[in-house]
Length: 466
Image (cartoon, rainbow, N blue to C red; front, side, top):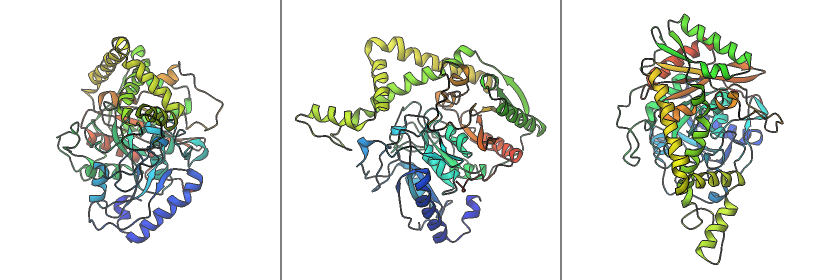
């Protein structure tokens, strides 16, 4: 059911149903950090009385915002993030602050301080992260729209693993004011829906310039949902061969090839492209250096002095040390060690500046091909969602990991609009396809997505029987 169809229902019944699902599903999915009892919204906006979930790193006035970290377990903001404000103005009602990896650092949603988030298609499998709770609440049918953040693929990978649409628009298309950051040059606000129509509608509501976020764009916001058109005849679509060649699972390759053939049959002009494989293998390492350096700087304010949890000490320095020692998990501390090492003056040229140069080379290589095309597509992942307690570990030095599992970082490196949507299934688990387009070409992205939705027949996919 689309949001447009939901708006025809009785608001009270709709909101109560969503709330009851969020409460009931929490027992198995563990997808919410804070559950909010709904009150009808008087606004008659595009999303009037639509229940939504918001990732717990978005500030919500009067509602606890923890970013799934013990260091913020008592933090209650006095203001709304701009995205939250826009949602309220459009008429939505927040029913959940969704689970996430601690401080949005991770790709599994296993590091939240409330424990793992579970995939509705198999409770023994991960949701993906860091926006896993938001993906799961949409995939389970609890809410039709959920907000997330995407620094590497933190919206788009959970979307693939959970069988929903995950959108990361152009850098600056949606304001980040009021979002607890990870890495400022890579962070994007994103979101989840069950269909392309709702994805386009959500961007019409959320996009726009915000003077409180100086990185937000002045570019015109279109009525993406009204202009939606699935006719892709003549659209130039690039197949990302580095990713396809790195994937070992032939079932995934076969489904992707079938989809590409379907796009060609609809009139798309398909071209295969390949980039320097050494450059592609450098994506994750480059990301890891830049992201953790920026995270270390961004989270220096989590010190027990200004806000959040505090552990007492005899001096201010002791308070800071005690608070950060007990407030962060070992996973986060390791990332801060990496970030701090990259920021040491003697290491900046050797590590951080070199990473920025490699980032630029990667973006330039992709943009050289994409500038004369409409989209770059590839499987979002070469695997189904891994098991939470799996003993099978992917070799992180292989192309199957370095390229196939990390290629969507390119969208963050270049600030490009990128979207994952359902492509099919393997062993009962969803598979996703990723579309990346030129900056501010979200309309093209949605149009191609609508054509893919028509080919797959996977519009409105939800998994309620878990």
